Structure formats: structure tokens, C-alpha cells
Image 1 (cartoon, rainbow, N blue to C red):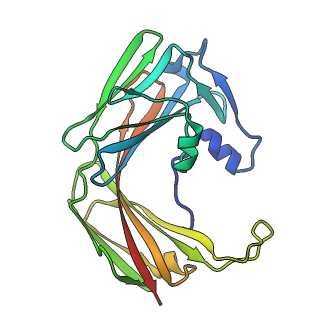
Image 2: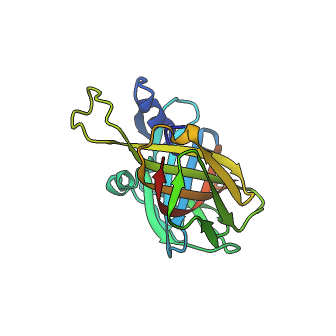
Length: 248
């Protein structure tokens, strides 16, 4: 597909879909064990000493309603409090309400996550996927017809793999873009089994221009939240990015 599957909050989905929009409200007076849906992502680049933790809370009973924590509520990852930081969130292309850079951990170690709900503290741990050992091809050219990505380790329980390709496509001359320069394009093949090999085909790359592309391979694990919210998951991602050249 030609759009990367970002982890959007319900509010962001509503805006992108052209709906009535979204609104924010305080959690004051709300029982989050009944009405809170937590969406948390902890992602890092392969080998990095830091990870980015992002979280958003939505109201399970009000479509597109974001819930803002009060001053006496907080989420922490690895002992670091997640704070509202719209600049950080937008620069990362992420949707959420609070974020922080946190020390990364390597499996089998775990991230410690906590929620302080006005003095009532809930904690959980989440084990990330194993970091990549190898991803190939590391460099060089890939054909438009199809190319294969190989990675290790493989076969990890609960882990799936996403592959994203970004590059350029010819300017389409639409009314929203009058610069006549080539436009960014992306394709994704997601939710693959952790078998160590996957192929990206011509159907995914048909609209790409030949030339430089970035291929990102992500190992993904999702675990249910255990912090007292009604619903939600913690998604853990490790990414290895490759700079390759697409050829006809």
C-alpha cells in the first residue's frame, strides 16, 4: 500500500478522515478503568541507547475525544515522565499527547512502565523484540520487479515484521502542490511473520522513481496494557533503516 500505517490515535484518525474533528477533555471525574483507552508506543533505532516513548489516551465512550491527564496524573517509562511536547511529536511524525526520550533496553530486559493516577500507582513491564543482528542487503541496488529483505534473529514469539519503503514519485500536478518537483511516496508491507525473509514486489513499487530509496525494517511486539485503563496496548518497535538504490 502507498501509505505508511502509523499508529494514529482515534482523534487523528477522525481528522484525517474529514470527520467532525476531535476535541480534548480532562480526565477529571472520569473513571479510566471504564473510559480510558491507552495507546503507547516505545520505539528505537537498532543499536540506539535511547528510545522514544509516546502515549495518548482516548475516551472509550466518546468518539474522537482525547483525554488530557491532570497535574496529579502521570505516565512514566524507565523512570522518565512523559510530557506534552507537540514539537517533539510532530518532528517524529507521531500522534499522541505525551512523549519522552527514555533509556532503551535490550531483550530479555524489560521496560518499566507506570501510571500514577492521583496517588494510585500501577506498574507493568514490557519486553521489546530482540534487536536486529543482520539485515540484508545492507547497501547497493534493488530491482523494481521485486526484492527480498533478509534479517536475523527470527522466530521470536509474539513478534511480527513491518517493511516500509520511501522514495520519490513524479509530481502529479494536483492543486495542493504547484512546485512541479517530484513528490515523496511510501509503501508498506506489514504484519509479516518473523521468518527472516520477505519480498517487496512490483505492485508496491510501481509508482516509485528509480533512484535512492530508504527501506526500513521493523520488528514489532504488542502487549496488553496493565496500568488500570479499560483498554489499550503497548507497542514496542525496533527499526533498522537501509539506504538503497531502486533500478528499473
